[in-house]
Image 1 (cartoon, rainbow, N blue to C red):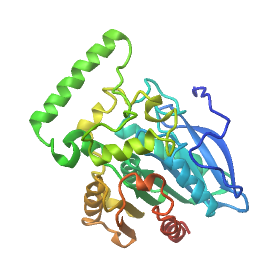
Image 2 (image 1 turned 90 degrees about the horizontal axis):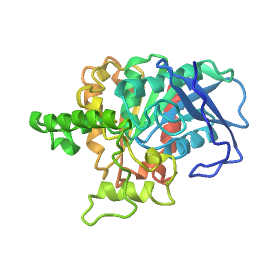
Image 3 (image 1 turned 180 degrees about the horizontal axis):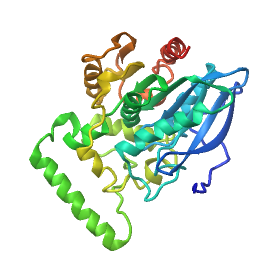
Image 4 (image 1 turned 180 degrees about the vertical axis):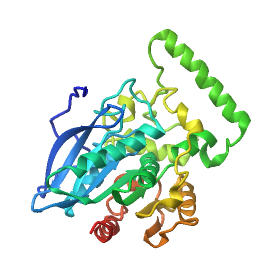
Length: 329
């Protein structure tokens, strides 16, 4: 039985709607029975069956932010595009709220492909996906599994399983530190069960702390300022549950990414703290890959992680468009 979602019918995105684009909301269900909410963006002047793109991310964001901006731009360029909220977040269903799963979030992308495959004005043989930040990793994981996906773009990608297990820059990659994390999370589960609710880890602070690393500064300037703020983002201001990413500690994604035969474009900023995720994932994907010629890593000079969320003069939309037009034909 599908969940009943309460979808906002007003325009509440962090970007304006173009007169060239038609927009409406929709829902679809993944194979875990979770109903996902999505924004549909269509080019008004297009006709016939269109190539289609499913988009999600960043990790902790909602579809009204970066993924919607990307989808909106792709619709202006002739694509049928949907931006969806992952399970347990935003306007999508699932309880408890504000949890993540490598398996379920990968499934979310494949469920979006299910939806696109049966739309009357979509060519089911011309479907791509695009993931931003942590959902770049999930998109690449989905491309490893779903052969209906013909072209995948990752933008400013995180491997969320790696960062949860190893910490940033792999500085916590030790059995001792992982045990401490697992012990703390295990104890928290007991506390949550006793309390009958799930403790929140807390959202980003409104103000930049003294001595904050640059990536934290960048996140605050996006999520907590008018530039990218949305009330449903960051777990409606509460952040992820403390135990929300526990499974990431022992469920690595991208294990067989070097078997992806479809086209992949990985985009990252040169100055992004997270750039090593894309560089390493690209190298792993290319190692013995049977179809290497349709894979590319594009490094944007001078760009930081969040520049690829919304900076229109930095996000390479012409390159992304050309990539999809080349491989969705």
